[in-house]
Length: 480
Image 1 (cartoon, rainbow, N blue to C red):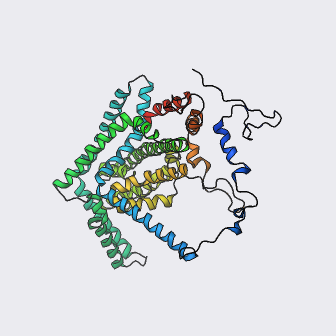
Image 2 (cartoon, helix red, strand yellow):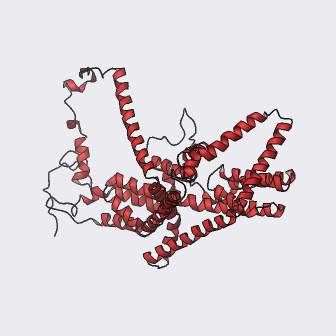
Image 3 (cartoon, rainbow, N blue to C red):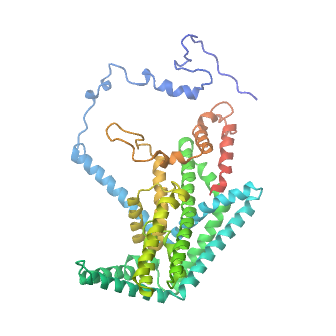
């Protein structure tokens, strides 16, 4: 059944205009011509009308019309927005167990999604690929946690005693050396750090704001089980969740949401895979150096280096300092200096070779932003906050780039060169297929309005372009 053509209107062939006076051109629909008609001269007020001149507009009067009134209105709006933000944060802190479980599951799902896609491309069923990847990540993470517990548990007391004794020796050397360092100042600083780690916000974060004993164990197990369940459903039905969410939006909003999902998954997955690789290399190199030097507790120290590498910038450094203190007590100052040299060399290798090659431009964050994110995350959520703060800060920066077009790219005649590398922009990280998909989403409504789209008498069948876009969203399912 074909749609009858609208009546033909007489037009001047030389003018190239349609019945409404707009440039119709071949292939242009009435929907395409409508904005041109609205934008014509007839859309505005007559030239002689009083509203055509800004000077003729009446000036508003009242207590809110002057500069102080406008500033007060803005201040009230700011306070209202701040109150909403504080309320949301308070609610999230009340359900911190659920929040942490979902955030961890999202990171793990983004990291394992490429494995699911790879198995599906090898003619595995989606369910079988999901179960295989799910069991694989459980075995790997469970094995790492079990190895950490057994490696550190039996020697943790000795490790702490060695570190404390090494710090005492270092403090004695500093106060008796040529540098003018006050012993009381060092004692006060040590006491403040100890109080922060044992009784302050950091300890509350480590304890997850729960009581010790049974309550803490119950909270941990609840969060662990919830994380496992959420991870399984993200791997199994992630594409359905994304497809369902996108269908509530249209055009540019749908395209931006789809790009947000793709870029967030790319950032989280790349961060986890890259950080795990870098952490493994750091642990092996530093652990091998400690073993060759004959430093005791080499295995627990290597495990601590591996865990610390998941906290950018400061994690590996703190773990290296701990290893140097143990070497100072057990082997002497020469071996301790060698350990420090090994840690510095590994940090340089990590910053100049491993991270650029393994992680590429996954984070695209300045070092100052990383430090601020680590500080805030540690204060709010303890060790979990320190681990999760950096990747989700990178996700927030990516979403800002996707949803805002206010940033001026390229060189400026006054400001100079653009401090943001073009390769670090979110748009530069999309593949050609993804860009084509976003473009088709933006054109969806216009194409579905042509004959064959929505009609006045009921729901219409989707056009081929709409069906193709929906298929593309489904094909993207294994991306989480």
